[in-house]
Length: 105
Image (cartoon, rainbow, N blue to C red):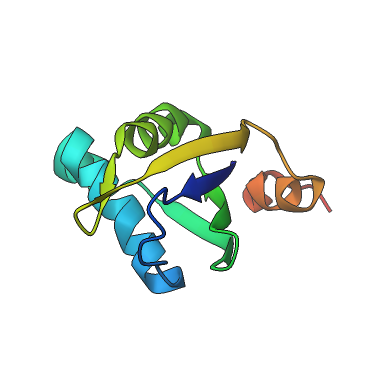
């Protein structure tokens, strides 16, 4: 899941740790503690362009998408998040999705 964030008034730019906290906070605000417990990985984050690539299990995609889309403020300043692409599977990450117990040698 790849998205970009915009701060229209030139506000503060979060670092990677602050961005991860922003994601967790957005999930908690919309979906409660269950949403905050959703495993989301920040694979890449570029502070300069405010772009990130996130990894989430497919069953959590709608929760993540809705929480980030409905997020309108960061540090009491308005912001907007929009997605560049969605629901893409990386061929490199696909290998990690298998169950190693089912492999036959």
